[in-house]
Image (cartoon, rainbow, N blue to C red; front, side):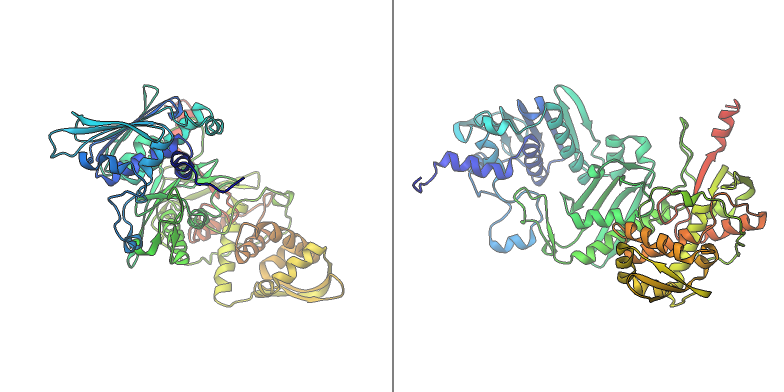
Length: 578
């Protein structure tokens, strides 16, 4: 084929494909224009998943009649004038491509009027071609009606999903911007039925309530942390308010909805050890920073951004969410068909996600292990009062400690609770340079698999730091001369088997955890009391005091809950007193 210049309308439709991928893309671009126009009321209506019709109407500043045609030409915008302006973009839409891209792939009618104009203007396009422009009476603001999307591009329509699926994507867009701009009232009507209606009260809590309901809103925890000219704010869900995918995490940068893999990971890392496997948090997190510190011009649809100080933001977001969880998260309430209650306690992130339970978690333990009353210094102890007031009643199946408090009954998993205590002790001692190690009376030879040997060699420095005394002894054989003090008491009579089990667990866990935390969590698990062990009254009392002083008293390092709360209401309901 000979090289040739593409016809203008063909080039326009190709270019439009970068911006307009599906009906939700149209809604996103039009909503962003409305917000940049200062709208406080945005009404969106769609039919047949947005393919048949999309209408976005606002009460913003409108477009002057003499500029309306120019607004539908490529690279035309009121938001930029020089290259230098790209360094400090503060608007949501700025490329000058939204309206011409929409007009290139659909039938479009736009009516608009600035508030101080007596009459408005109307312009109409059919797949990129203007078919008329005239004066028209209309309310202040702008209304854009998009019909027959991709009608002239049947190949593009084939790649769209069902009307229900496309509607869901549009609902997601409206939800994100309703959360980003709580001072704006959003309504979404789907095939004549109102699907979203936010109050526009400026309170993010009110937007969350209208979008997610009262049960979710009552479990959202405030986030607020600043570091100079950069700050993080918003709301995150308590750990038990989790979802099956990441679609309930909303990340905003200067209240622009964006996607950034690193920041999403920072949010999830803050929940480490508190969420079940393959579950994700519900969160609305906004990062406020000077516009020159973020590049919003790195993606055709403006969805992805680049930060100049990505590592700093990662740390700040992770810390902000972590502190919110430590300070505000309620205790897990036993679930049945009863209304949940909020009990003062903390649920903060820890070392990593949960792992499947193993037989060794429930294996009987015959040698007792005294629990000392020594506790770590509490970290931000504002909701720990619940554990302080508990009175131990007894033990069930040599696994759960039964306690009562002012607001009901509590069951404490003795293994998970002690694992949390030991984990915190290990991390504190390691940070302080302590190496509590117990030499073995006679060295034991451990024959390792290839994978175990690799894990040991890559973690040799950490193993030594935690109190392991190991030295090579031939091909994939190692002499075990010492073990961490707590683990030594649990490992007898086979320290070699204990080392092999630990290396297997670390290999699995450090895939999703920092290797230091993976090792500490595994040592803690092996060095903790197990299910099937009888505890004396003073041991149970000591365990609760130790648990109260930990960083996260309501989750073991692997994410399992340590405490389950049965409210007084639940107990009375079960016995017919309510």
